[in-house]
Length: 97
Image (tube, rainbow, N blue to C red; front, side, top):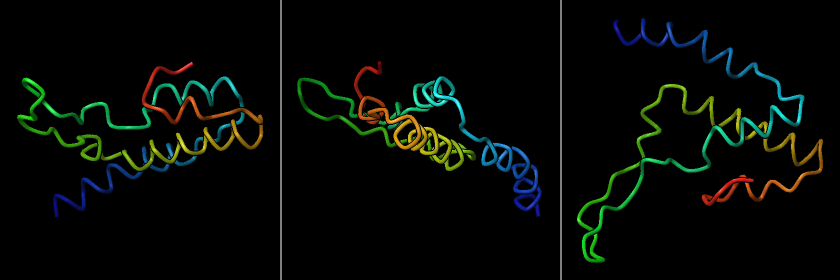
């Protein structure tokens, strides 16, 4: 019962995120810079080049994870398809342009 209520509460923001249209290059670039291509929390904790433990990706705990990833994908597609930009820098885990 409580789970069903929580799901209903999350539906309006999910629909809102899914309804965001990417129509401007500056907005698309901002989305690609704000939403990381990889979970920034996942890492190996090492001591003297030995892995002590692994921290798993925590992003999937976010109830809006799928919507954010879909928005980032729409922004990447807009930049590549409509603007003809090379989106490779947005797909790498190194520094962004």
